Image 1 (cartoon, each protein chain N blue to C red):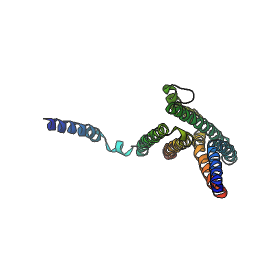
Image 2 (cartoon, one colour; image 1 turned 90 degrees about the vertical axis):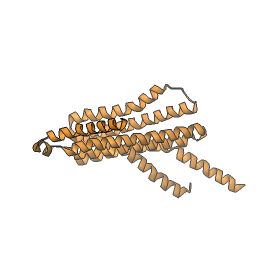
Image 3 (cartoon, helix red, strand yellow; image 1 turned 135 degrees about the horizontal axis):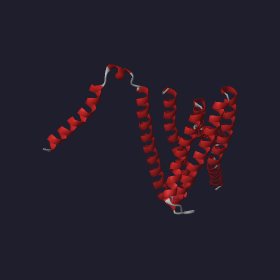
Image 4 (spheres, chains in turn cyan, orange; image 1 turned 180 degrees about the vertical axis):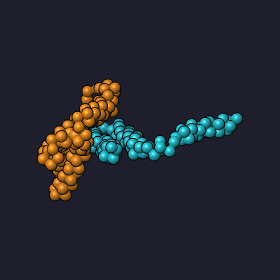
Length: 102
Length: 145
């Protein structure tokens, strides 16, 4: 029963994607701005990965600070520089998007 | 004994040198920001230069708030300094993005050229960190730190 329901939901999901594709005419497909669409995905992926990177760096730094508070100046400096550089990676993506999307 | 004391002196000098990195980065940001704005004004005109100057200011404020937020976080973890609310720390961290978005939107309404300048100005922090890295390599090789 569970397998059958999984199969039904899977087919429903596939049909949800399939119906708009079938409804599109030839002209609609030709006019799609793929650069804008892929730019959105690129920004989303860049933001998500940079967020993960910042979270990992912050978590590691906080753990190191809690273990060894005497090493605070070095850890704090490394964390600030790391966060600034990780943020700049998302900015690179934003700049490329602005350069490409007209 | 003298070797130990000379090693200790060298360590102290190295620690003093590396602990000044944050102040040096801020100074690099100021110098690079002014030079880049003047150069862009001459080469590309006032519109791009205005955007670049605004981007540099936002990058400066962004870096300052990042430092403040990390300092507050470290205070909280090590239970030292002034105790701040966790909501305040997070709000300060997120407010930086709002500032960038607001600046970008405001300048986008004025001119697209200025927007390119603003995006260039946001990389001021990276340029300053790069300069600091080069400076540290040169000084540490020269002084043997």
